[in-house]
Amino acid sequence: VSKRIYRQMDKILITSRMFSDYLSNEFGVEKDRIEYLPQYAEGIFGQIPPRELDETFHLMFAGNIGAVQSVETVIKAAEILKDEPVKFHIVGGGTDLDRLKEVAKNLDNVVFYGRRPLEEMPEFYAKADAMLITLSDDPVLSLTLPGKVQSYMAVGKPIIGAIDGETKVIIEEAKCGFCGSADDVGELADNIKRFILSEDKTVMGRNARKYYEKNFEKKNFMNKLENELSTNI
Image (cartoon, rainbow, N blue to C red; front, top):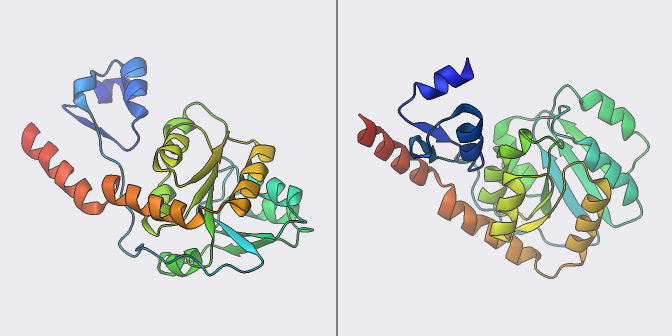
């Protein structure tokens, strides 16, 4: 069914560059009918100044909490780092939230906030020294670019990930943080330690914002969408 739909399209706009090979190899879609059009962040996500550092480093995961988001990787990393000066803030709801609360019940360095209104998210982001992103180890999932990447970058926060594929490539291209393999708890914990010791935290945040402005701003999205529509009508 998907193959029939895709092959009838004049143009397919993809939110992750890695979808191009997937559509071409799996469905026979010609590359000249595929264009990269990444998402942009909601307008409420503007640049936020770095948090004033104190004796504790604050890391935040924000978004849906389901099985594929692999937030348990964050919880297990928090257990490894329970004696380090770092606190984990989990903002969001989902099918895996109650189970993860039970997993983390004995950890003093993990705080759950539940699902919060979108309007409150910039205020939460402002409390973080870096943002966390995780996704399950899956070859198809790795092709995606979660929308939270754009909002993390829009506010100018460093990103620490345990995620494969497109997101890992973007974090490395932007030089805005550290990223290890999906579901790799030890590597995530090590990257958090690297961040704590790094003297480039402010630079990483600036790099995230610069990458957002160059690649993900709403005006870029609208200009390209308008161009694609006018070209193909």
